[in-house]
Image 1 (spheres, rainbow, N blue to C red):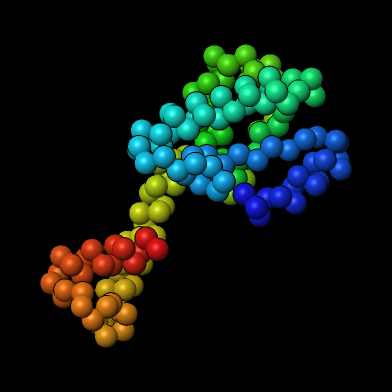
Image 2: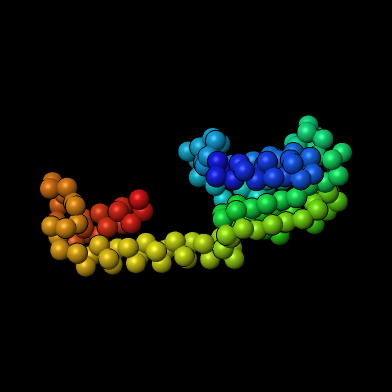
Length: 158
């Protein structure tokens, strides 16, 4: 979230608002548990609600008159999912959420994953079109088709 830090200065100078940055598990300054169950969209949305409730209880979020939720890129997907899953049951979201801003956000997690898959396939096709000597494969990497496919997938995910 470091590239968003200038937004904190804008918010604080414009209205004295405190800005809290949230890195979901596995990214930024957050922990990276190995257990995959922590990374479901449902769990990530619950984590956002839990974090907001913490700020409401410990950082005077309610006394400040509510809060604005800003989600950038995947964070926008996460903000939307949080609202879709929890707006009806969370009194904090119902009563204190003043606005939601989604920036550079796909239309949802499925769209984001589909776009990522398309980019990976495009990159794999570009690499496959190159002659073998221009692919920068390690000399000891096997040249059988299944190994080449695995290498292409690894390169596309870098």
